[in-house]
Length: 338
Image (tube, rainbow, N blue to C red; front, side, top):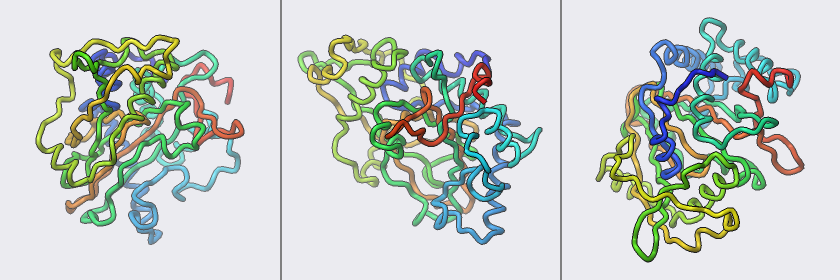
């Protein structure tokens, strides 16, 4: 993992907003050359699938996984799911150097995601959990929308609430309401029932127990699922700042170690207005695995391309101690595991 300092992109204010709302938008993260590498790769994969008479929306649901979509031969061994060296070698079979996505996939992306996850323990480092392109074909609004969901819901039940993940939803094209953008319902805000004062998340979220207690607590207090059209109308009523105003800073919530599972009883929760994402290409929406979101269909005459790697705080283990999805260590310090 690249050790470059990205604190100018993920500041303390950015981290606070991520934990408060369950997501945060950071514009223009990718340099133009980095953006072009991802565009060339997804175009290569799309052209291959189309040449194979695959309907990207109907057959793949708009989701293209680089290793398993059929473009390269299936790996003989499954060891690549736990090996950075093996995984990187497979990824380089899709688009070879200097067009490889590997430097960003195991460099900038995890370095940014790490700032939004609990501190990684020495024996269980930050891992690549999944990666996929999400493509919406032109004029496909009737089949290219995604329903409300949490990213963690695709893990098995025992892993959903035990292992935090961050999705890095990366716009490869300018994204707006016309071409299939995201619609996000932020985390409910905890409020002091006596004073009406809003609370911010705890000051430090580096501890895994505190992180999970807060994120699981707020997500358990979402209201009934919103009608998407109503949510879209609400989102259009207000603009959303990617950086929270200083005046929005509230008193941090204190979660005593003895009340990790019961702090919700002392507060009430207020639903926040849904947020419509409108961002330029190269920007990233960092999404907690616990936040509720959906996406709109593509009404435009062009493809809408996005790339989404997901990172986990250590390897995700499900029922029977089986690894869920990928568990590729992002740090070179763990090459001895390859």
